[in-house]
Image (cartoon, rainbow, N blue to C red; front, top):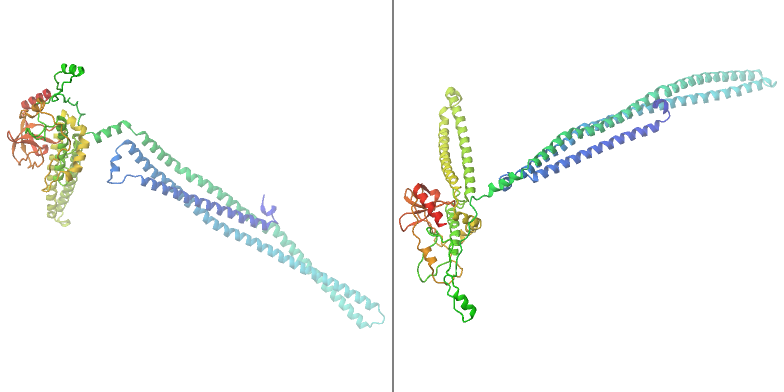
Length: 592
């Protein structure tokens, strides 16, 4: 099956068909090119999507990624980034292996096709020229033959006419012979031209044209094979990235399976646990004691009057003074109910924390004593870890400089060993400072860890209102507590007081005996107790401890019988008397 033998007379149709084949190839190239653009656009959109939801550095979002669910989401974003990379690989491979190769091949194909059809046209022009030569030789032979016949007829006519002279007859005979000779020559030329044309025509249709058409057929078949190979490559490029895409999807599945709801719940506890216990039961406050009932004349009033019973008091707390409350036994001033005093106590300590925060520049106290115990422990532990990392960095630098100094000592031409002494001294000082900081924070950390198991009714009650009261106090302390001279004062209560006579219950509260001493303490730093309920101490001063820190960062001390108050626990070093401490705990249990 050859185009040269089967399609020897279809030159024009073959020319159109081969041009159509090139158009198909160019259309496929355009299709692949658009596919690569789509892959690149898709990869870019995937990368932008992944980048959009990545956590920003040094932001609150970074803290959220400690949970397994958010870590799984972060892994998904990273895998989607790799997934986008595979689509970029598809685009690059299709561009290099298909689009680029086929574009070069199309140019070569056009040149080859042009050459083949040029040869075909040249062969056709040659055979057409031979045909024209044959036709001219044939017409000349025909003309000469006719001229020879006319000359022969004229000679015979002249020879038969008796009136014609011999000279005219001889002239006619010679003309007839000349024409016959010219006819013979034309015949010979025509015969030669015909043989030549037949030979050229045979070569044209059986040799030249079949060879040219065979080359065109091979060219077309190569084009068909090439486009088929390109389609296979098109599929293989996709197939090559399927395993990597499968791994990306497997990693996303693995990240999803790593989500641990129990662990996330535990992290929530660690993040927000205050260390306090829930508040205990509130003592019953009986307001029937000071009320004097009027006896009515009705039988119902009489029966009620006869059935008076003694008021019962539940849970009187005796043996411990409510802090931050001024005693005032003036008969002109009405006494506040116990609930008002409890509320005043609960809102007092956050004010002191606010004062300390403002005193240190608004960034919070260095020992994090404004935080609940559990959160304070975490912050202190984090600070210790950071300081240890800084120490390790400084030590690594010191070791490197020490080695450099040894090299300089052994090889003076490389540098002066004394040039690093100053830097080594600086590093040594830095390390010593950092170690002192670590010791300080470790001391606070040990202090917190030693107190965490202890829980009192005061701490339990404080934990219930800690969040709201502390936030409100911190936000308003700088505005509502500051007087013109820069000091902080208590707001006057706007509540309407109940106008009731004093009772034995209030007398017992006001006449409590001083708390016993449970140890001593030494002031490590000077503290200016400007807030109500606090006491000023000087560095190195020895004082008596009458109440331990209950997890709120404050210790109650006494200088003498008249001066007592609260100081920050981190400002004093406490020495508790074990026996006194046991007695103190027993009294606490009895009072509870």
